[in-house]
Length: 118
Length: 201
Image: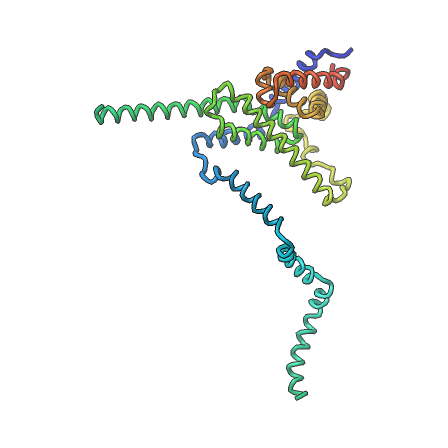
């Protein structure tokens, strides 16, 4: 037989109260520390810069919107570093880095070779 | 008015203000101590994580003290739970976004990773796993059923049943009309009765 709404609420409350009573010491200690930290806020004046937070957020959002709505020239300027990154991370560049010792040697040889050729 | 009289009046005013602030702080401390454990369990049922629930309760305490300590003491309870419920809703939103992002980075779980050393450790109070299971079974059933309720129904049920707020206080805490509270609560109890009614002895 199914219980009534009132019985369900009552039984749920009993189970809930039991779980509250059985909270472990470590949890109670953390609650206690949290309460004292909160009470330490009482009477503490709010920092002035916090009052400007909403205005700063709106200004930042407006700046971002303007930045994103710029023309193609500016978009090119924004994407330029990305192109640099592509070049830096390109396969050829990695090969060049692997042969860095060879290029260094070649450079030295050229310098020496100038005398030979001349 | 002489200077001495003025000094005396200022001194009395400062003493009165200081005494009032101290009294308010004491009342806040008593209120938070009285409400914190139930608030923790309510938040824990909503987010299914004790550490997260502790953080949410502490945030709610700080916000209440910072923003509403000057309100009448009778308003603190619904205001505190309104802050807490907002915190829980924000937590769920952040969690949903995090889950969407993290699904791309998650490695498949191995069977070994399911083993929890702390869960497997013996109970410090000497209860056997069977006893522990019997004691907590009803609570677990109820927690899961309450957690599974739609958000507004869960809020209405927990605030009315667990915290004992009246309809007006619950409406203030939930930021809705008293009629909505009654509807959400009624639907919540109906669902719980369907889910738990046959299992609970």
